[in-house]
Image 1 (tube, rainbow, N blue to C red):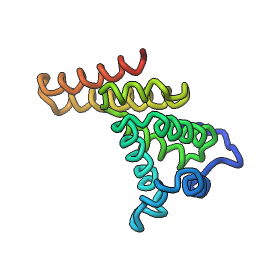
Image 2 (cartoon, rainbow, N blue to C red):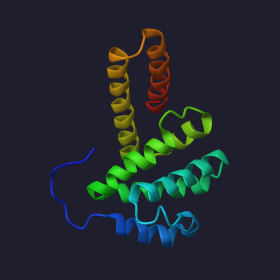
Image 3 (cartoon, rainbow, N blue to C red):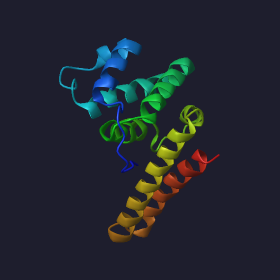
Image 4 (cartoon, one colour):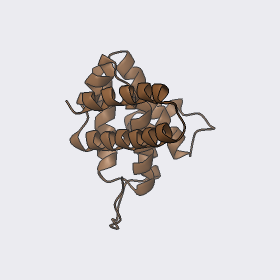
Length: 156
């Protein structure tokens, strides 16, 4: 996920919030007082907006949001990078294999596709660990089958 090389002038929560207010004012206004100032909750609002745009086939909005997230991701601080992984990519794409989500996923930049595949592999490892530790083989097989389908679709 992150690297250990110190970089200066990274995009952080303040940059995220400022750009969101300027570039996606309607989404910024959807952030509640309880969510405001909490990066992962603010990012989840962007994720919900992206999912809504995917569900309504608003391709221009989807592309604009994905491009914006990719731009932030390109020079994200560790906190912002984590929020993009956990509160954006996971919320929008993880476990989604319907055609609109696969189409949106295909439009991710190579760096966001790579990040999403990393997440899926991470969750597959967790599932394997849980399966081996807690679940009967019949239950865990269904979980693995769904994750495998999503992974195969992402690598097309």
